[in-house]
Image (cartoon, rainbow, N blue to C red; front, top):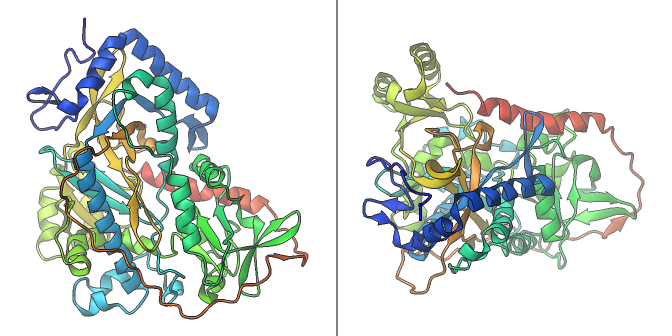
Amino acid sequence: MDSLLDGYPLSPQIHDELLGADGIRPECESLAAGFDKLGAAEVGARAAYLASRYVDSGVTFDLGGTEKPFPLDIMPRIITASEWNTISTGVAQRVYSLERFLGDVYGNGKVFDDGVVPRRLIVTSPNFVREVAGITPANGVRIHVAGIDLIRDGQGTMRVLEDNVRIPSGVSYVLTNRAAMAGAMPEVMRQYDVQPVDTYPSRLRAALEAAAPAGVSEPNVVVLTPGMFNSAYYEHSLLARTMGVPLVEGPDLVCQQGRVYVRTTMGLNRVDVIYRRVDDEFLDPVHFRGDSVLGAAGLVSAMANGTVTVANGIGNGVADDKLIYTYLPDLIRYYCGEEPVLPNVDSWRLEEPGALEEVLDRLDELVVKPVDGSGGKGIIMGPECTKEELDAARVKLRADPRGWIAQPLIQLSTVPTFVGDRLQPRRVDLRPFAINDGDAIWVLPGGLTRVALREGQFIVNSSQGGGSKDTWVLADRHPVEQPTVPGIQLQAAASGDVAVGPLTSSEPMDKPDRSAWEAQQGQQQQTRIDEEAESC
């Protein structure tokens, strides 16, 4: 019988996660055999089923105003139990350190006094929000949900590419991918003891409820979305539905007497926790963009009063700064007293003596990233640039060395991907999701594997034509000793109970004009999409 892997190309510089120098990796043997047994025609038919299922079910994302199904490749990615133990430990360790760091940034700043990170990096960061300095959340948590992007280099080492602790997205595709694969490839999935992912919504809701203001026995949680024109609207609606909480938009919220309420047909209902999917600058027109109608005027004041919690915290973007990324190994040693479990990608800080000139000399072989970037926006891929583009990039870097870091071009690992009637190698990354409830950090066993569907492509983002794979984390049948993370004991600084107002209020409110809201919900996301497309 012909194999779908016949003629599969391997490179000594690239780590393939199914095939090694000695053939198929042991954990992938049943997977490869199952695909070969089905044959190319049947696998192709089931791949077509997956695509049509996503179109029919509305599993989509918005790209430049066009709604598209999110591509799901039929070949899953397998991660062994022992490797996942290392990954989850390293992710939790990293989130814990970032949580502590944000507490210092908006609190007493001990990390700066101790010389671990220069204070000037914070005050010069565009993502530092002075308006929330001194505001401590009810249970001390600012990172309720984190997405940590990982890649595997040519030697097979898993490394952290970047941290996402503002509004990490993509977990909805983890959930839908698993359900789709269970229907498309049931006989293959039965060969493995795959850890489930369907507990994520209940764990997220529990963490959000744990973040409610003191004295609230039955917290009211809402998901705040910019609206249906946002590219992640499918995720917002799915999470709200699976958590069993309302999905609200800016015009639905109102702040009165230092508290936040949601408009209902029965009047105003008190809101205790807002899981926001709206950028900082749109959340409160009193403190940020004065023309915004995506949030609620007075929201920051309600946070300061301790009557509402916003998850993730406003101002978290300072921890996403790529310059702070370069300090994470030092922050882990400082806060955890141990070495990082997951290493960073080697990086140059262009402000340091000699670094800028070295990077400019080697620009054609490096990747240069804006420090405040996300979603792949603004990246300069030196090896893919023309001479004119490199010259223009040098001008940018000289003008603002604080705004960039440089890294070597990593040969991302590949996973077989169904192309035509054969399996072909395509580059992947991995975004595990972590939930912090204030007592412990839990990492969803799996995560979003994003795949660059074009041959030779490095950038895996959906805006660049990327897709996804279901990530199968195998159950741990033989537990082994793994590096540990210190117990997560995040102390709340607030003292005393917070008086809670009535659940409802019948005071009439005028509903705002929705035309500006409809324009801004598209504007917020369209700005990101345009920026993601800016690369050489």
